[in-house]
Image (cartoon, rainbow, N blue to C red; front, side, top):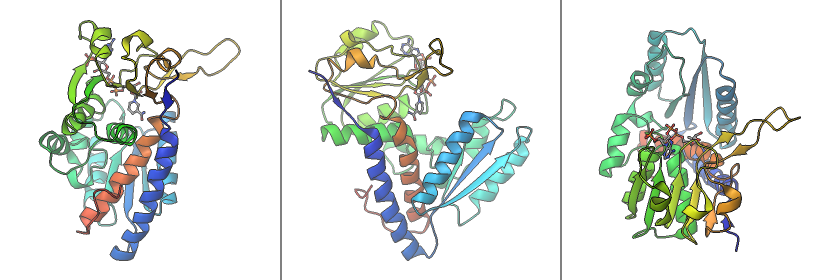
Length: 298
Ligand code: NDP
């Protein structure tokens, strides 16, 4: 029987509605809108599309969007000065510096300059540390979005076997931390893992964050497992087409015949990332104003 589809697009829309309602309540209490600042350096086309989409969705949720565009030639001093200025601006609750940065700029240094309480991407080492020790902070948007989809589908995750494929700071590691905090038994697999199919086969939950098109095959999956596909890969174009198809890290057609539930690509994890960013920005706003926010409200 075919797996149930986990509809990230619909879930993200629901989350944005909740954010919008709480953003209106915030404005009533604080006398200002919650504000998210996005900094883009250079003219990478994919980053431009992404930043535009963030700006639109921020405004649609009733928050203020501040966009800063620096030329590709911007110096590190200029960028760090802008980040400092945003750190000190009380109308800005969240700061996101769009990655990747041009090669002459040190990403780690830039991230380290963002006030951890405005670091809505959750990339600052302070927030990575808070996640590791279970203190409230900001969690990277993509893995938090995956966790929301998993809890929505499975309810209590405690005791489940989870395999996360990938150990990046942005997806794999925080995903593993989140699943540990939910009392899963977690294995983190990576490029050096021996017999990956056998490792994946024992999992009730598989999160694939690798960046290799359709790598995870049907015979790796335990029947009934829940599969979250983070990968976004563009295949080479077919003859006569100018763009190739977007696929995940999971062989969707095969795996959906074995899994209990699966996220499609596109329309699964992808739409969650910006919705969770807006959620994080709103949480930052409530915290920055010292206002209570029910942790279960979002
Ligand atoms: P990285 O390239 O930073 O990390 C990839 C990870 O996969 C590494 O840990 C690497 O292992 C591991 N890996 C590589 N090859 C293999 C292999 N053959 N077997 C097992 N593990 C392997 O990628 P990201 O974490 O940034 O992103 C992963 C994917 O998710 C990409 O497709 C990206 O586009 C997508 N993505 C999607 C987002 C969304 O919004 N939906 C957001 C962010 C990313 P090692 O550490 O040993 O090198």
